Length: 311
Image (cartoon, rainbow, N blue to C red; front, side):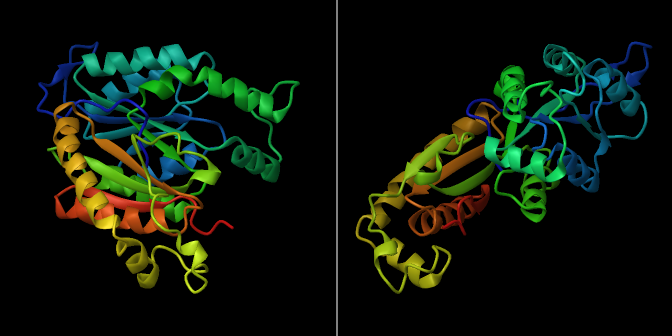
């Protein structure tokens, strides 16, 4: 699970029931708006949210978002999700206005932005032999670029980013369960510690980036090269380096300073990205250790490994 470069939603709190346009008193709903790039997996996200107890509506025009939420609030719904994307034309401005209206009405709207790298989107479209909704008479990459530009505003306002480029269905489900299934009334901070390889590029959705390349690389130890940072011998090699213990201790202190501030500001999701050259040894071991320390400090944290398994 990943977070936007900036953002977060205010902490959940007791909200007085609101009234819909008909004057009927309604209870506030948790609302998740799923949007993002075509081909990134929004429909799969919708199905997972449905399994988590959300009432999910696909391809909902932004103008109908608030009426649907108010209708659900008059019943027994407490969790509502809508998939909204470029299939609803001119959706971006309308969607942002609809989200503001929901918040003003006392509901708790959050935006889940789903995205993937261009080469992954191209591969998915080519395998399905589909046209991009904004492709027109141009190339597939032109449609993807146009959609990225159209989504710039809503992407910047998103509360949670999920990059599906390297996630299978099971990993995507685990990411969403970590974000939504274990939520409680206190709105705890959820942290994802993401290992990655610098040679494959920086994660776009990282809040904090840590460079583990200052540690000796197990790649150059023949018996460790084919293994990963999840193997005990590699982990012990990385964490046993003279600089590893003070680095982990000091950066853990930094996180202990930052996390209470994030909570006060209503930030609910944090992505700490830990990088090494290939994302296989040092970053994996360090990410696992950071996740363990965060859990010990009472933070909901999970380690994920973006580039594990790449050559």
